[in-house]
Length: 197
Image (cartoon, rainbow, N blue to C red):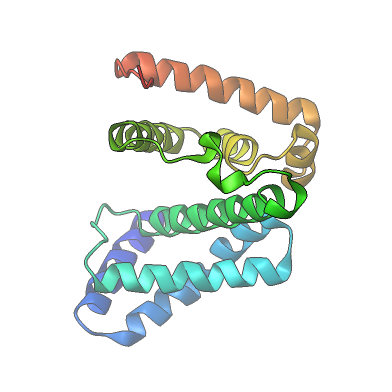
């Protein structure tokens, strides 16, 4: 059943790219509940979940039209990754709005050396490290990946993670522990050097 769905997804993707508009509507109908539920479980806000859901499929459509989807047989995983990145972007922007304000400070935050641009080389290295880490996190089981993203990307406490994932704090902590153990194993296995130095 699962492989048939995957094959059907890939066929619908190809049909949409070839110009069949109804194919994308079928894909959205097929996966909307899973994608919306995934978003809602993290953001815990119906209006925000609906906005991110809409943005997800706008980005899906744009990416398909511009040839940014490489067929790997995992359409739904790709869509969920897009929604996850949009969730992270939302919380990152929200956190910046809440924490970086010039009005509460005696000096100009935006002219502080702490906020000054990194040189191009540092920026490129940092982006590469960030990209490597994201790829590694994607290799983790769903529950471990979720706790890492909620903790390190969304900045949630373990109490908040436990509430949002409907588990005990001990379970959330355990998932984080196993996630870090598994990440170390993947890093060692691939001989990766995740450092700016």
